[in-house]
Image (cartoon, rainbow, N blue to C red):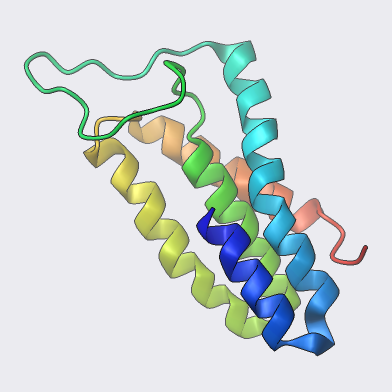
Length: 129
């Protein structure tokens, strides 16, 4: 949701790059949908740490890859393509991704592969409608 809001706000504020920001806003939810398809194919369960319940909830019991990492890195990569200052989005992407193992939601490899998948999506998506 955060990427949808940021992309939408940038589309309103920066009219000269409006199409690119709209694509960035839509890319977050699209990346999550693609990520879920991969989750269904891989079917890796979320980590279970004896005596330590996860600190957050999840919409499914599937872990690989991390949807937060995939969507965050996809949008951050696309934002950097729209506007060089858009690369600042990687700060938020890293923060969101790094929090996932801490919360007990993902293995580090889930986050790493999610980030790689996200960068690939961010590089491949056309930035015009």
